[in-house]
Image 1 (cartoon, helix red, strand yellow):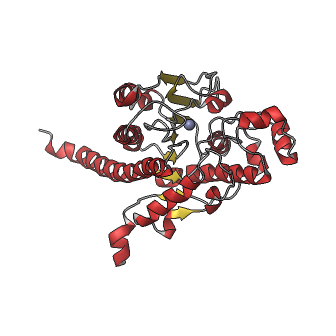
Image 2: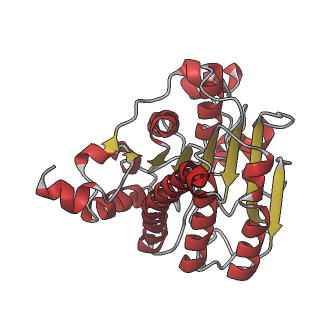
Image 3: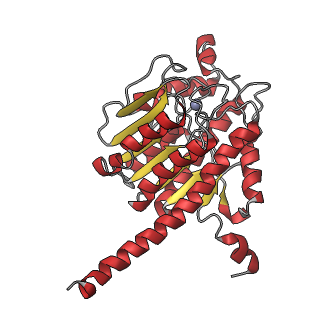
Amino acid sequence: MGLLEVLFGRRFPFKFVYHEEYWMLNTGKHIFPVRKYRMVHERLAALGARRENFLKPEPASFEDLQLVHSLKYLRKLQTGSLSKDEIQALELPFSAELISFFRLNVGGTVLAAERALDDGLCIHLGGGFHHAFADHGEGFCLLNDTAVAVEKLQREGRVGRVMIVDCDVHQGNGTAAIFEKREDVFTFSIHQMDIYPSEKMTGTLDVGLWSGDGDRAYLEAVRRHFPKIYEEFPPDIVFYLAGADPLAGDQLGGLAVTKAGLLSRDRIIMEGALLRKIPLVILLAGGYSRDPAETTDAHVNTVRTAAVMKRRAARLIAQREAEKLDRPVYRP
Ligand SMILES: [Zn+2]
């Protein structure tokens, strides 16, 4: 082990999935802050993440996209024949480049999920496009990366029961609709009621909060359900959409949660999964602070929390197992 490894190698005990094309998407003056991806990447590099920490995704194939999206919708994307209304619902300028961005993001979440199954945890520095439905896109989401990853892993027999923990401030309407009535996919969403999407879909467990609710109500709600739901529905993998848009001052959310509040949320959700050895895929999802450095900060906090929680969980599990082995010896 070299000196650098001693100093930094253990800093991030997992891989990141990232592609520089994430921030090259040209959205003009649009609020969708693609440069946050580059900023998070730079911050992590400054914190000691090494080249080997990063995995580069491939764009998802149309075959994989068809596991979730209708052929009719995918054809429309391929031929660029979305209607005016459909483009309006998307709220993003439509282009071939946009399709590439989303295919790459779907590939990224698939890769992160595969890696989480091997390593216990993997973070996709992208993903979380939960407003994409099977047959249409909306709210900055063209393709539903999480849903495709779930279907692909299930189809390959690598997982059975899946849990999606969606903590983006907006309800994961597309994801909830895609997995409606599915007993093997648990969709949890904690979101703000009085913002987009105006029509909420029904997921397995929805927690609605209101503008200005803040840390107390937010964390109370998280603690009410976690880690309990990991016991009630033990999944083979958890997809955690660690949205930064509940943060106070977000331009598209009003929950007014502080950075410390988001940190506690991350800790509760991650610890519950890691202590139960449930593979955990973390996705960045939303974040629209006026100053992108604020959003970046919140995302980087999530990554650092993951590093702390992963080590802590490994230590506690090792301790627990050692105690189990010792018990017969010490029991009177
Ligand atoms: Zn959002």
